[in-house]
Image (cartoon, rainbow, N blue to C red):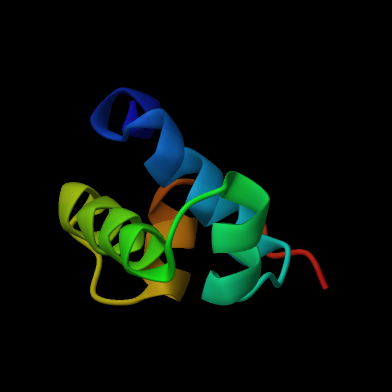
Length: 66
């Protein structure tokens, strides 16, 4: 269900975060500016009703890779 609540860029940013990538790295990978990535992550948290990235990853059922 969470997949329908998130845009493709929001999903992608969450997946990259789960792999330990920084906002700057995600911006470079996605070809976006850092503020765009930060906004995408903020929208993902809002859509999922999460207060942190960790909570958003749990709610989205995305495992953290280390």
